[in-house]
Structure formats: C-alpha cells, structure tokens
Length: 395
Image (cartoon, rainbow, N blue to C red; front, side, top):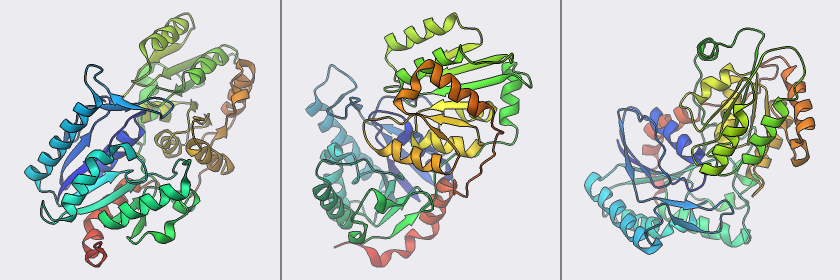
C-alpha cells in the first residue's frame, strides 16, 4: 500500500511519537508522514518519508493556534498548507489516508482537512480508504453534545474505520465519548501503542553511564516540555533530600520545547548537585526508563505506556489543563502500576518521601494484563481487515 499518515503535534510530542511507532510497524508499505508542528529531529525508518507542512503550534492554554514562524500570518500559512497537502495527494494517489485524532480533535485543522476529505469522498484521487487513528482518552468540551454531533457527522461521512489505540480492559471510548452508538463505521481496539524494550537495554545503558549495582537512577521527564517545569524543579529539590547511603543519580529530560530561559535556569540549578544531569531530549528514552529505579513524569499516553513496557516504578503528575492525563493516571494507579501525585505532593519534603517509598518496592511487582501491541495490531488490521470493509463506505 501507499499510505499518507497525517499527524499534527501542536503542544507536546506524544502524538508524533505514537504515530511514528505505528509508521514503523507498517514497514511493508511506502508511507509519507505528514507533520506540521515544531520540528522533532528523529531518525525515520527507511520506508518513511516525512512531509513537513509549514508549522502551527498551540499555546499551553489551548486558546490560540499560531505559525511557528512568527514572521508569517496565520492565513498565509493555512493557504500554503492546503495547497501542499492537496498536491501531495495528486502526486501520490495513496491507497490509505490514516488521520491521527481528527475529527475527535484538531478542529482548527478543518481548514485543510475538510476540503481534502471531500475531494477523497468524490474520488478525485482514485479509491482512498480513510481511517481515524485515536488515542485512549478524549479531553472534555464546553459543548459536549454539540461536539459529539459534529464528530459523528464527519466520521460517518468521510471515514471507513476508527482505530482506538487502547485496551478496553483499562479504558474504552464511551467513557469520554458518549455517542459511540451513533458511529456507523467499524470501531477497532488495537491495544496501546508502545515500543518494545530489548532484554538488556537497561543494563547496557547503566554500564555506559557508569552506574553500578546498588546505586540508584531516577529519571524525571516532562514530555514535550511546554508544561511540566514545576514538576522537574520539585524533583530536583526532592532528590537532594533523599535518605540513605546509596550513590544516587538523577537524569532530567525537559523535552525539546521547554523555553530557553527555563531550560537554562534548571540546568544552572542542577550544575551544583552531584550526580544530576539535564538534557532536552534523548532518542534512548526507553532505555533510560529500563535502566531506572524510578521514573517521575507527567501522565501522557506515551510515557505511561513506556513505563508499563519496562515495568519501572513510577510517580506520575497529571497535566491539569483537562481530564485526559488524570483519568489515565487514576486508572493505572488503581492497578498498582503507578503512584499518582497531586499538587500538594510537589512540596520537596513530601515528594522525597514518596520517592523513597516507591524506590523501596521491587521492580515489576505488579504486571497488569494490558495489551501494548497497538502498533503491530494496527498494521495487521490495516493489511488484513481494511479490505473487508467494502460494505461500510459512507453516504
């Protein structure tokens, strides 16, 4: 198949990396990954080409969207993006259009997606299947009934299937989208999307870092870095208060999008602390979690699935702008695989106490029966199940 995979990351990097993991699983096919947020420098698989549209990004309050290039107007960027996206379809004539999140989110990208979907619906590019790729939990809306009716209208008209990257034993779509009964296309649960750790990746990294048996490694992270600075500062303060004689290491990953002043301030504060390192990003993040004795992080989809994949003891502090991270964190805490942090837990003495408690637990003491094969199951269904949906084409 020829696949165009559309993913727009406007605040963090979770959407992008989840889409990239799915793209890796589609290694039998030619794939164009269409991105359009701030650039993320990663090595792409050989079968994947990235098409970067002129960038758009959201503010942390989700109030406004603006060009990443501050010298350009929003209208100018939108017009160029529409043209580039349409030309890509004319050139490629894909068999499959895989759309991340929309129409359940990214409403502001309807300016380019609705005309394109209407053209696909009218067979302007030949026969193209359209599939929505959706994460586990949706954010709440001010007008939830109106939002759900708009989603249903778009989904039922333009899409052939909905892939939900979750395990319904943990969370199902109807918990945050109440009109699932109105969805007329197949709903397929793929399991959660998570990269697979190698058997010795953690031990290998500890050796490279010079961390011996009996020494403690804590990894603190903040996703893309636009939010979460307060958590990282709290971890840095709490780390200096940990008890015991063990040699301790703390590696902090701020995320590539933390503003320069905050990053420099955090780096300066960490410079005087023994065993502490601060970096923006690492392509070996899964290895760091596999090597760690404790993870302290936000509760984003990708980080939580990485925590489950390697079995590292974890403290998670949900991003409070909406319900998504808190719902996920509470469900995982109920299974005993993470410990939920509330705002008051970020007081250094309290956080240090919680870190000590979690560090005392044996690694992998709780292993829930949750599917983490979402990328592989997505590829399998697109290869084997999508062609059986001929009878589900929309009005």
